[in-house]
Every structure is written in structure tokens, then in C-alpha cells.
Image (tube, one colour):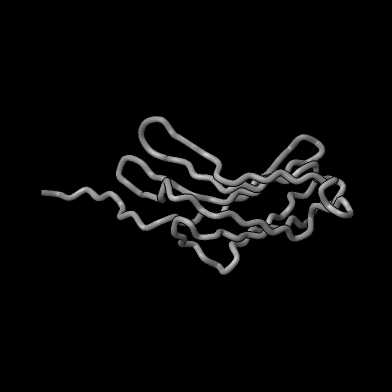
Amino acid sequence: MMEPLISLNIRGHRRDFEPGDVLAAEYQVDAIGDDQIQAIESSVLWYTEGKGDEDMAIHHFERRLPSDTEDGDMRVLHRFETTLPNTPLSYSGVIVKICWCIRVRVFFKGGQDIFFEQYFQLGSVASGRVYAS
């Protein structure tokens, strides 16, 4: 099976958002037969990277099945939107990073899955810096 293509775009081509902004996105799946897709999940989430325990939380989640579409074709362009929360804000510190992204995951009838992520910035917290004395 050829690996399908996942196109994911944030409407307005924005990458920087403030709390309370509406994040609108759209995705489309190509290069695969409509009968091979079992489900598609889209989510807006944040996660931490760095030292210590890593955290992750899903802010918005949607799972679509072929039965959710008019003709069962999951490959067509699909739009969704969500209002972004007040916290946590994106942060790039010395010890920890907080990253926000949109993830689209395609599940195939054979049991495999693939995903694609598009990163964005929430808020404007100054990054952590180390100063030499």
C-alpha cells in the first residue's frame, strides 16, 4: 500500500495565537482508496518536553468514521475549529518546553495508522534564558 498524504492547514495561515482566539483548521487525505480508511481523528493538544515527567493533554478531539459522511468517503476536505484556552501557554525554557499542535491521525482497515502534526504558538511568554556572570 502506498503511504497516503495528509494535508493540514491552519486557516488564515497563522502560527501565533492568543488565549480565547479561534483556531480554525482543515485537512484532507489523498493517495489512498476511500475504502481503506477506518477512521480519522483530529485533535488540538499540548505536551511538555524536557527534564522530569512529560505531560500531555488534549484540548479538542474529533473522531470521524465513514458512516459520518454522506457517501462514506473520508478523503474529502474537512474543517473544524476550537476556541483556545487561557493556559498553558507555549513556553521554551531551559528545563521544559510546552508545545501546542494540531494532530491528524488516519487509521486504516488493516490496523496501521499514520499521523501528521502542525505546530503553533499559544500566547507570548518570554523564553527562559541562562545568563553568564
